[in-house]
Image (cartoon, rainbow, N blue to C red; front, side):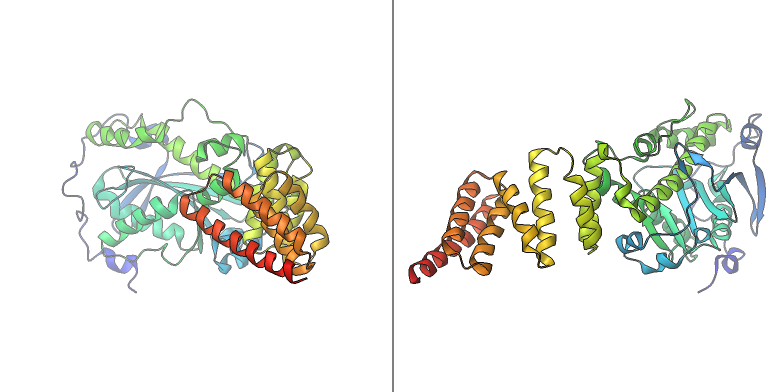
Length: 408
């Protein structure tokens, strides 16, 4: 496929920008005067960039930016085995600031924050277009920065950043440099791991509660950013943009630190302190879903050492029992089902009925557990269809058990 560099000279710089404001007059508070930064050359002219370097062992809050090896469980969760063999230098961390928060073909990416590890340094670069006519320069510079990388890490990038960047490249008829990259979107993993403990899983909240990092008053809410850029296009005054660059840089740094935290957590999940028992259970469910039975058993067992609300306790007991059942270890599974059944867990009653019918041929005991399951079902808050489905199954089971018992 033709590369971006091959296409540049054949394309006009005004493509896609005709309806946006023309270049603004020179203002004393230009972007370079306010932020420092520099200009780099592309085949179609210069683009403004702001760069920063951090040592890979730099701490953001209580978490270092760097990591050594990617745990295979993260690659399994992302459903991309390529990730397991990639070095830290192959990853790029990306966050964008745009002219709108809903995306779409009319939305422009005016600031792209990207960072990658270069040797023992973490290199953060922010590409900025002073005018929409500079979009092709930004895209060209971004493609060059991405060239050594093979995987991208984002936060909500699957739904927002990456499709929007792809749209900007495609609008110029260029290939999308990120199209073949492996991708890890930490928003979805964060929602899964911290749903029980944190009411909000925004990057800002994770930065504070998980990473232990705080921002200065220079930060601003994301919803303000598009208007600040539009004001800049009209006035040329770059002073308000200083807060936008700060916000974007902290998002990229937090993204890298959160990724580092997760690689350590998933490599050694049993390390979680007991006060975070909801996290332990969330990890147990994650490892269970990814067929990592041993780790899931260890995590459920650890979580059950601490006080849990009754509904969560009964569900955890049942889940652990099911893991033992899959291993054929009913000596450990049955006591857990009995504890869950005492807490009125419907599925625990059903599993006990199955156990006594099929494993013990103790039909009287199986009848007892089936009847108790029917009593619990009557009081369970389920949809009509779901309740009716369970009712039919349990009544069928009871009929069969009564017949078997009469035949003894």
